[in-house]
Length: 117
Image (cartoon, rainbow, N blue to C red):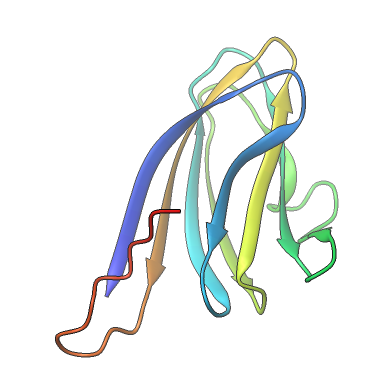
């Protein structure tokens, strides 16, 4: 089963969590990012190790970079950890549009894996 979530988030000047991915097993997702604002935004993806948030990549990688106004980027995330978050900020603020696509294994007749936390 393929699930696709499409949403948006205001990116403030103070670094904060923009969105999180939470599942019961390893994370394997495709994330489309679009900066629809007028200011360049900074972002980084991190996984929760069980005790702390750890960056997925180093500065300049797809996991830890900037997004210029009107720039669109595809980021593939594959992690052994079930909790992933994106944090970011933008001088003057920005507006992030994003979509997340993930495959799930679902047994015939079982529930659709959409959570409300």
